[in-house]
Length: 140
Image 1: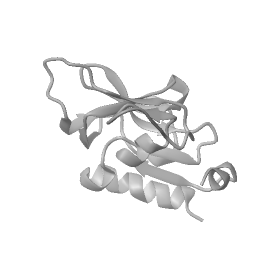
Image 2: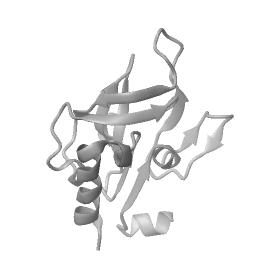
Image 3: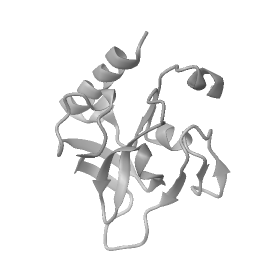
């Protein structure tokens, strides 16, 4: 898989699929990811907020990438997760706030690999637009 990614093949990871793109996860123990995007999957810290984070939350777009073409800052998407990716700002295309800022969309430096922590397929017209953007921008 890494060879295909290094050759520029597109890859979209959704929810757990996004988390698998990273270097390491602490969910259920310490496990290696496929290490395409440097980062670590960590659990939301204990707080007054309910975990899992479940429901609609708004995107704060930090980086223009093809997946987010035509998506407005503040658009709502649907999440179901107890863990989030801790990664460098350069890999964060969009973030959300749930007691802390966490990446909602990540990308590798080449831009051919993207991951969404939320579920585009459950995020109405916004999510459908993203899936269409992926096919049109990254498909061959």
